[in-house]
Length: 346
Figure 1 (tube, one colour):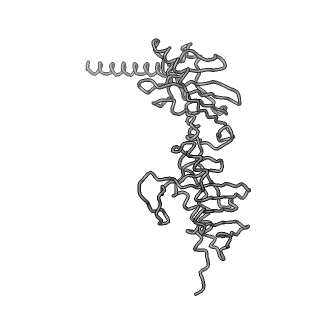
Figure 2 (cartoon, rainbow, N blue to C red; figure 1 turned 45 degrees about the horizontal axis):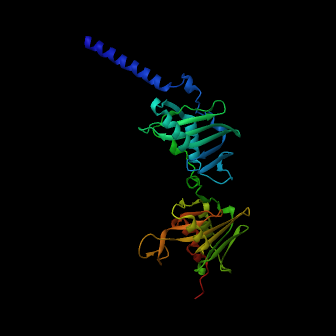
Figure 3 (tube, rainbow, N blue to C red; figure 1 turned 135 degrees about the vertical axis):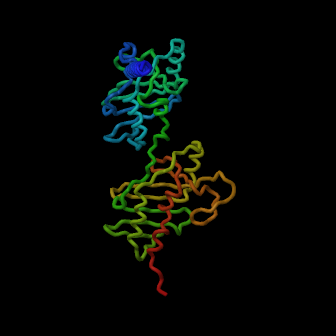
């Protein structure tokens, strides 16, 4: 009986100690006057409409809220998920601990020279700036510094974390424009397309043009009209434009090499005109293969180029890497339209 009593008492003590430890960890810094002024958290992220991220190497990206979406400073498309990650960090950032006294000077110097600077603006007005440094040795915390309008720039670095998550804060905040670049090229419904024109530089027999004429379509190849058209095949072709993305930004070529590609002749040029009159011109270039020998492309021909990837110059003159798997349905019109040609009478 005594053993049972001791066991019950021990369990109660463990539960009480566990609750105290939890309460101390969750309330850490809340009543500390030094930490109270370091208000990193942004509770109402709906008011944030402008974020500037500057990396130690000088790279900078400006993110602007435009309605329900975010764009770059020129109104260009950017990926939305990374913005969600930033705002999630702004809501859930928490004080984790102090920097040991003997490390404060070193950490402060690094934060001053090697940190990622993140400026938050609310309703068009600057609110606060985070300086995000390296992670702690156990990688469960991040050294940070705060600057705000109320308290200026703090000289007290602290260790921060994101509530409910383990890991570093820094990787969420980057200024590499390639990583922010929106990969979407086309997102058209069939009724939104007025015409598509595909021109090859050498294989001119593969040129074709699709035009909408009211509720009907016309198809020509090198100016010669197809005498009859299978409308279902035209719709199948145009449905390819519902979701076209490039694979990745250019991470392979130097600026000089990019200029060289752009000065060369594209193997194919695709021009799409929307029903609203907007023109989109894509210039497609072969990509050199890193493998030895020749390969066979999707047309069954020997190729000394990369048969999986190609370069594409977008309407904004940006060079990106694309996949033939995605683009062949757009540029190989004979797959769809040869069936529409009338066969000669025997």
